[in-house]
Image 1 (tube, rainbow, N blue to C red):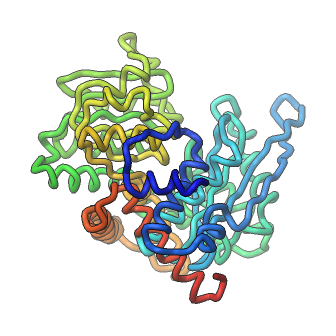
Image 2 (cartoon, rainbow, N blue to C red; image 1 turned 45 degrees about the horizontal axis):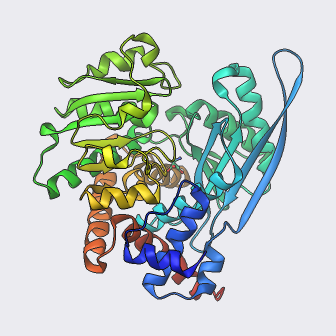
Length: 429
Ligand code: GLU
């Protein structure tokens, strides 16, 4: 990466970068954060890529009797502070670069929230929407067998991500325990409650996002119940964000899924939409008045919550976004070029690495509970999560002010520093 690019990022200068290449964009952000903190290029060399990446080929006997071979990845970004941690996604568009970027984002989240982990991520190129339950189970178990050498409760702890869920975590836990011939609930988080899952984990990411919305709105003297919110994506995170906001009296004016969006300026009936959605977050197929996803993001609202995939708010639509606050529930929804446009419009962005870190935070609680065999109430989980969310959000807002940088650069600075320090203490750099 050129020094010029990182200087531009560090200074928040005006020329928009093309963006959209998630790994390059992430590396530029890491470089900008490290140089702003005064670390050398040696530190960047070690942090710009995961320390370990495994590509696997997984044969799966399909229901038809034929064998189909799937490609999977596991990227472990940095283990200077502890084992690595991060979800596994099942999606047809998974790429190695995407998984690498996602693993780096996990490091930043763990750093901001002081979790004793580094980042990791896994992905399998597949479309679970077209697979039977049995095929998904065989794929999940095959993935665990393929990566079993490099994962484990003190090495790398997986969790759910896009299109994976507690059932898939349960199969993976079972498979890993069989391989190790030892019951290992602390190998994976996001499990069903009866198998050692944590109370509050299913809604943790969404609760964290809602706390982020509340705190961001408060800095602009707005209350949650006065907000009109647009939620892009209706999977676990999007639907729970919409539900929590609805329960708190906010107006959820729009929701969307892969098929398009629904918008009603009077507010949508979220519980009814949740009743109608399928397990992949599809709901708009039940309606006729569905708008295209491109139009959806630019509808009138106060807060926009992208809760789907990467690269949704781009140079093509950022200038038409009407929200004054963007809270990123998805990983990587905003390109750097869009970031600069939003900054010019004085839009407050709560970046993904803070806003959606409630998920990994309660995953950490789950791992702690598994290690101790001592389980917390939902109230204890939520109270601890709330405290950590509020502290982390304000830490980022303060850092952005103090260094006169964007909230995203501030988040990267806070999140990467502990790893640079830990690597120095260990004598790696
Ligand atoms: N997949 C989630 C994320 O992107 C959660 C990871 C975890 O719980 O380890 O943050």
